[in-house]
Length: 158
Image (spheres, rainbow, N blue to C red):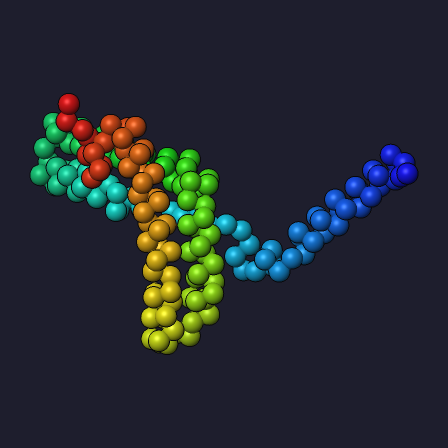
């Protein structure tokens, strides 16, 4: 029978062995050391409120501009929170990982001007990019709903 002290020693050696393997594995030595994060696409999700505010400021209609600027800020805040609170923290982790792996395998180290390699990169990663885009859009629209915004980022009419 193994004593408790021996069991603890075996457990400790196993634990440190696992840590050693983790910190020296090739996946930790890659240029892409961890799961990437994606930046909020504010130009995509908040395009309409931004344009409305910009047009208002150009026309110098100060009475309307304050509410339009507030609406644009609300849209940007909702999109940023969706990315920081959900999308980059696991809401789309599989999709981000799939895009990262695809880009490492197909898109890294492509010589400038190599059209066939660029096309292969686009073709091979198209589906995983679409999946990531769908996942991100789903979470952003969920946050828009929470913030009382329409799909285009404008305030819901009540």
